[in-house]
Length: 332
Image (cartoon, rainbow, N blue to C red; front, side, top):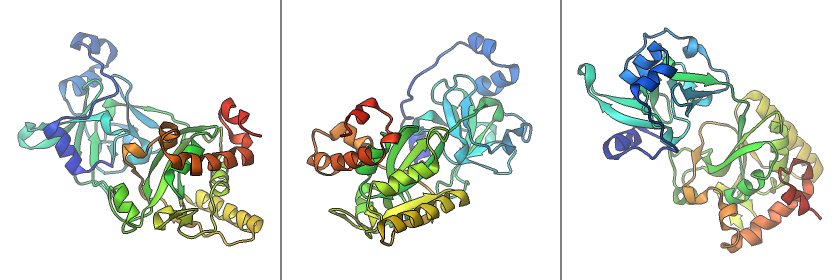
């Protein structure tokens, strides 16, 4: 999660590298942008406050750069700032936005630009809501809202290397990120979480297509591929960071989780100790913890001793959810 100190560092020492670069002449930009889009994005203009209905749109979706189509923001991070411009707490990706100090108009501000094509977007301020305290104040004319049929689920059940490997193999899952949630420390490190003092759990954030796999099915696989009856422990992994936890985003998700927990208690004949808690924030883990099994299966004995048996259990118990013929072939 980016905070104000990160913005200042990017502006002072260099912005993150974008995934791609788009460069055009002013003449080329004028052929693909409206006069108002060109004025704002290429000439660093500002639209009138409350001039766009985009401030009032909070439906699920993505916000792309009007110039190059790069995804800049997600509706999950959008909030009503009351300023008259669309406002967000975080960019879609850390490297989506570039930052530059702006001393124009007799004030010092931090300008935001599309890191792909250099389009002026607006400014970012350190007066937003917790936990990032950032307010990306963006010109609506610099954005293009696009529909997005995706949802997110956050939960943990032991080492996130294991849970990540399982959910990467589920049909309808678009992305899995390992991280931390459920605690009280902002931007915790792996070492801090392992100390037990942050109250965070190792979790994964699953982005999925609800038309291909439901939230209930996601939770069913989660509860069925770890032991939800052991407190703060999964096998040899012990500590509060390994606790079973589901972080729900709305009342429907909460009720689905309660129903499934009851179902599993009846089936197992034991009390399910899975913690049920409202989702607040997800902190991505360090890069070395992402896509761990796929990159380390032949290098870390933990993968063969712990993760492989968990994957075998998943393939046997939930063959209908497998997204790969290779995984299906491993059943039996």
